[in-house]
Length: 472
Image 1 (cartoon, helix red, strand yellow):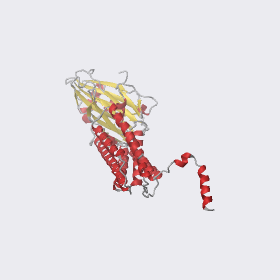
Image 2 (image 1 turned 60 degrees about the vertical axis):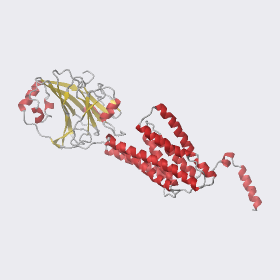
Image 3 (image 1 turned 45 degrees about the vertical axis):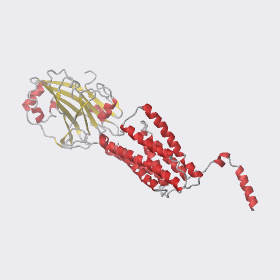
Image 4 (image 1 turned 135 degrees about the vertical axis):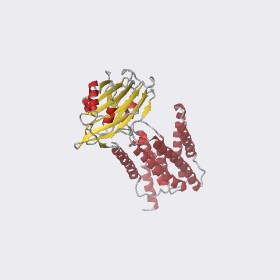
């Protein structure tokens, strides 16, 4: 075949190409890297609070930023630094997602510190992207066309300030529009370099982008799953054998005559019974409204009020007992309102105390009830926006225990009758292990319930039994 025949063959093959195929440029390494970086910036900037997209999209965006910087890391020092920062950003995001699956969600200062570090790393990454692009244009002996990247740094700096001093939604909407336009402008930066004939050679890698993304996302999912699995239960603290109550037999008989149920009185230690020596009246309320088909159907709850007429004080006891051991033993919660009207009546409240009791292998055990991250456990009173005190108790039932029971007690000072107070106890039982981010049962209940006198209801994966019931 001579030269003329070869040119004729090329001419014939060219006639079979469509105009689009003939004119469309081939994708360049610059185009692929900037496309990954722009999508990464967009996804890490989006917050959609449904279907866990607020966790999934930023994670995917962080991986795309890392892949884009990985391709450009040999171009100059700024891109190498940006590659290291993108890796650190992905690591921080993985740590944050894992901690959200654990009780660390209750540690606001820890999560705030991680969020602040992540924001600083993001800002430095934006800065490295801008300076890295300026360095590439300088190497290509071209005027730098990096205004979009530079304004992204300015815009992100402004958004960090907005996080400290929030603005109204109407003012944030124009910023969002500008943000989108800047990212679109950044995605077109590669055209100037392509037209100038500046070529980039992607850094050699051992693992392709696709498998690197799959591996990182899979590792993140495993870390989150491990955090959830390890946080399904709380450790039992200060477990000790349950002592047999052998003293105050005469006093116990007197309390039973006043109306204190014998089976409930047996749960009180001798030290508690001794404090009831001057009791004059006892009132017992049977609480609990629950579905007979639910796992919580084996739970009973009773509230006993002991009045000391000579002082006007009242000692309250909220007893609970699992007559049928529950199938799921993960998290339990007790939301206690000692008295809804306490501030209106200027009533003094004693610090609540709680005990969990059970049998295992023929022996009886007990452990104190308390809140998270306190040693020894103690029940802390807080003040609600409705101006009454409440306490949240989170704990786990023993894995193999039977005849599980317990009680919470607190004192009220300043009453003269047993009708001018309104205590309420809500017992919550976790039914499903799929709770993300991790939260206490009481927080889930309080965030989703706008009333405190409902019958049995189901809140996502929580079942509750409540005193007083709707007939109270």
